[in-house]
Image 1 (cartoon, rainbow, N blue to C red):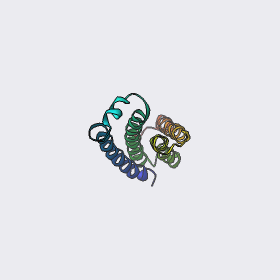
Image 2: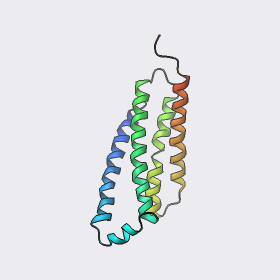
Image 3: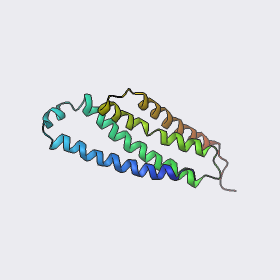
Image 4: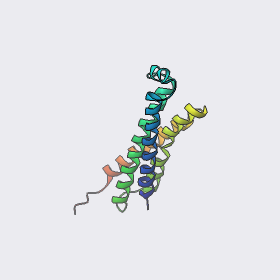
Length: 136
């Protein structure tokens, strides 16, 4: 069933990035050296981790929404499997940001995730535009 995995993985990813928000709160308010963390607010790791947190939740929500729409309109939309996989692959963007910050990975996963999520949203939009009216 195309869309089910997007919803499930979207909620799980959202929960993880929400929990990651608690880590960011700890680093800002309670961790040793919090002053240094606060002072690096607009640059460096602090900025990158906030980007990952925000995009992780946004892309998780997009997966939930896309998954719901794919399930709801599965019989009338084409290419639902491809759209589903592209949206799931979009989660590579926030995970790629975290991989850069914590593991020193190159930004390739960020780019792949951004491109695949954008492609899934555009493809779904075109599919809805081309869809014949449901009222008949």
